[in-house]
Length: 145
Ligand code: RB5
Image 1 (spheres, rainbow, N blue to C red):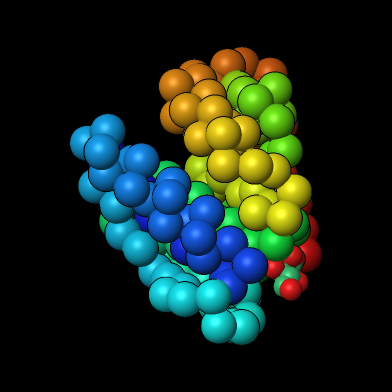
Image 2 (cartoon, rainbow, N blue to C red):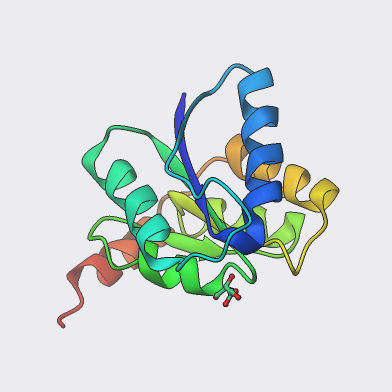
């Protein structure tokens, strides 16, 4: 499976660790940056992850900033992206099972690395429930702006 990953400076070290974990497990990882702990602005990294997912170049994306919030807002600007911010294994489960989130977001200032790894594992191994949940995400797609 191909996965895109991106972050800002607040999450650079966590992004590197998550990337290494995914590579060890055999995933193909496209890293859109950032590439150091030097301060950067998160929107372009969330957008870059979202574009790769929406275009089909990768199946899923992971976007990490200090809280996961800013970078998720940026990723969700891309049509077709459903980026969910999670903070626990339980929220990682439900954001796949009910929301079919194709981009997982979390905050390096909010969760520790063990929790981040466990959330990624849970999200990658959980199936979308479909049914009424598919109807609901289709309703989101159809919302007028
Ligand atoms: C950067 O200081 C911080 O604002 C960013 O990482 C993120 O938390 C934004 O939502």
